[in-house]
Image 1: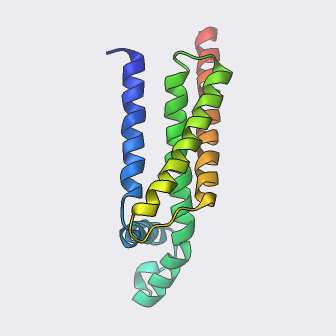
Image 2: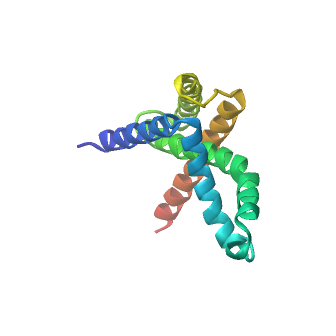
Length: 156
């Protein structure tokens, strides 16, 4: 198996992961976000475990939206990095950056379109923007990391 094939398999696995996360019904997706919210609150909010359940729910509900948007950003940061790493194998750096970002943005748009068909979910243009920004940051971060490793390797 070539390096390119392995990289492409990782991209495809991540695309499938994103698609599967978007396929959850609205209430199921909300439950997952709230589950993450409870974990965050237990680690960060003083005396969270001794608060009344209604107070806990209120706090968790207040951070559900940022959790969901952070998940969007992170999913696409990973996708951007993986796609860039794959395309960089054949394309020059600038071309790989542009193609990776465009590919991620188009996938984000198709993912939002997919949500039209999922009960309790609605497509949002702002999610495409968040996804696209996440992809861009993932691409730039990996590009900088690879450049840094290349300089370190050259100096050894």
